[in-house]
Length: 606
Ligand code: FHN
Image 1 (tube, protein in one colour):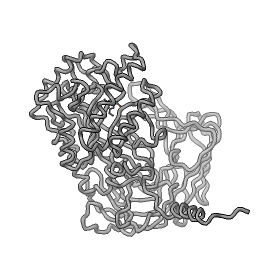
Image 2 (tube, protein in one colour; image 1 turned 90 degrees about the vertical axis):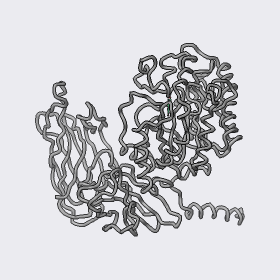
Image 3 (cartoon, protein in one colour; image 1 turned 135 degrees about the vertical axis):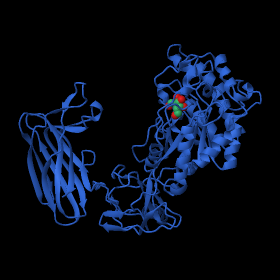
Image 4 (tube, helix red, strand yellow; image 1 turned 180 degrees about the vertical axis):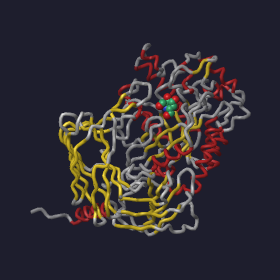
């Protein structure tokens, strides 16, 4: 018989013990390098360069592409390099002051800045010795925007990031330019660009400007689909690790975090917001309007509320948000952008605790209709759950479903006195009584405070602010049978639904806080000529059986010949819950000759 070595047993015990005892952090796969980044949550992206002088228009013609990113004008409008450089004459160098961008970031509550040191046009915004296609060689005063920004960031305590377009370079004879799909480059030529421009320029950026906190690469396809080789990417990353080991690298380097865990954070698509909670750091780059570089004809400005919701939504899934400013050629930030940033900054001054260093909580993302939750553990081990209420309920009551632990205290984050808000707690349900007036026009934050991490029940359909339950195919616990999911069509006049041809079985769970009689309305469309099919709903001890009546057609869009199927939501029956508690609502739908198009069940107290 083998004897156990006492030391290995001890080791095993330490591992088991640490797994049980050491609390899991909100974002457990964050390396030490990236800790500041997940604390920061909100950053500024700056697209500024020669293209800023064009303002999205070249020789009177607007940039050629419906996805008119102004910073692409060099390529899109096939501008000659020398002519493109003449746009520098439009810049009033006495007015350009990168410190003003840093001050704006600071006022907006942003904790880091990423500047397009070299965008796809290949032009360096620093004094690069690699070629004279750089700002110092092209300006009378030998300006170095990277140096100026770096010193302003240090002065104001803002982390510095640099965007470097490694894959695409429209200026170098062997850089990638999409016309190479027609006039190909050899791998050797591309490697010449890589070794003669990318590597030495990155070496300059990582050597001459003090600490660089992150390098932001920009390649939106996998390296296997591009001319870049994995070896080149690894060479680039190794250079960063050699010269600035603490510098973060984003996944648009061309290597995903899954492929290389040494990549520090994932970058989602442009203006793509988070959908899922991730355990490693991630970020959405976003614009206030459409273009990244300044475009004089921009008109679709996102509202401050939607930008703030984008930030909160991302943080509620452990993500960051980096919002772009596209300054004009003289450095001015468009009013529409700066005003929104200042408003967000005001909000963060009051509510910053719910964003910085906060992250996801364990309940499903869109469970509550009133907004999103973020969560943090404070230094003195208090657990705070922040309820970001986008739409202040008319009833002044805020239903919170799924938290089993009774909060120690509930208050408004904006209230310095932390005056307690009245609430009742019943098993997994908390009802918070809100003051009549909402404290903030953008989003009001209610804090639930606990001594330890609150226990949860995560599979419940939350009571919504109208006091009912919306039971949908999206929040069911289980479903099986003969059905097809159909997305919304005709601009949502036909809602997303399930097409059931045969039998469909599904199950939801709800918590009933106020026992009594509840009505159940089923939303569906049924295109038969007479009643048919069947629905059977079991809720607690109640059973409802019904057939479906034909719903007919309706006009989706007047004068457009859209005669679409009509979805109706008639009351299908009532059920009685005698005790507070968790109830299962199980549903079975049978179709006959015609499919049943099922949308949702609405359950509301009578
Ligand atoms: O092509 C660029 C674009 O100009 C801009 O820099 C954005 C920012 O995320 N990145 C690229 C497209 O994904």
